[in-house]
View 1 (cartoon, rainbow, N blue to C red):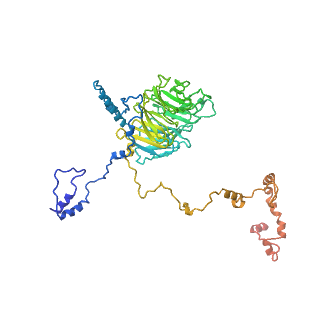
View 2 (spheres, rainbow, N blue to C red):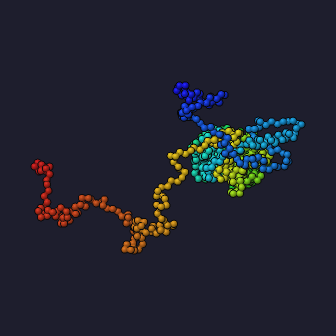
View 3 (spheres, helix red, strand yellow):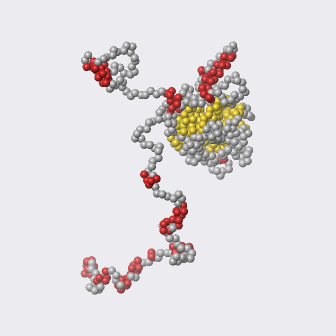
Length: 598
């Protein structure tokens, strides 16, 4: 065998993944083989960048909820028959459910339905979770853009934070934070129908519109608080409480305020609203706070809940002088109904009351609620209620005092409001709930500043799944560490001068000392003292206003009045020539001589 044959045996015969051959090559023996093995280890076996394969299931396993198995059984069963099946249905599995209508096997069909319900329960997007921890006060607003790729959150810390699931890694940090309305809490956030902008409802009387990257587009007008008729003002005069976009008209939105009005705005007109819905309460003064408002899904109706307990529904195209539907004492007077949401049928809507209730209403029979759920504690006026994407469940959060248990996410049946499932979220109140239909993930905002994103690896799409599998960027050795404080040399304790704990008396003493404080001498007022002649304030002012007469004097006369004095008592050059030249002789100019000759 030649040397070329040995070299050719070491080079790769093919590229890519090699398959195991049926027959193994005969082993070579000898001293030459050991030498070639050392050289063979340096030769490449494939070309191109080799990517490490990720085990996605291991990433998902890290975010699995520990108490998910204990929550499969519902919290309670009402009208208790032990054979009643607990039905929690999911739209992603509805197509796979097949019900046998065999009359001869009723017992078997009941067992199969129970197993199917448990399987559906497990496929709800709640098996895994991630925590977004960047707010330090109550998360009072959440909004997902229509595609579900970007989340924005607002809180009582006045900040709005931007979370991008596609660009976020497992460190779960927002890519931007803004303070849109300085010193005002964020009450509500709403993305537009196209997702290119979002509306901010804060404690200010002005609504603001921002683009999707967090740059301000428009700030809408504030009304004149001295005008009694609020229908004549150009905007709200009190803090905003709620808002909503028109479901079909992308340039129209509504806002509710504490000034007892709901105003309809055009995006392009920031100086004045389009229409005003003025609610006149029967309470003393005729005004009350409109705590929540919403459009119906077809955009034909506007609902408003007020602090005096009334519910009102107006036609969105007017007239607004009188509500189409109105019900007094729908909720307890003096409580804040924090949320109103319409269903897809445009006849049913659900309200979240400050009286710890959730009520379902039907506009076709508006005299009393269809169903009521009690003992759902609430504290924050931003607590909301939502429908599931298939509208078979109603979700809301419950409040809890600090350190006295867990705030819960409650899932109830849409028709009966029976509790189908509860989830313990954090040891604080659950304020906001959001369930996005496209990515099939549930997002909660709590009073401790945490945002929980719940998903299922099989039933959910994109969203948090994109961030879980992306590892945090490893910090290089030469990267700057910005997490720790930067200490200047002279800021160390060894270089600091010892200062008394309280220097107030010392500073006051130095301030009274005119020399230490370098204070200029003030004019003496009253009787003189310390060798100084006293003057009153009037004399001091008159002296400062005395007229300067040097401008009115002739400069030639002012100089000549010293001519006699200079001759009698010369001071400068005159004494040097007093003996040799007592009479000064001055040089004549040539021009003067020529004039004399002529």
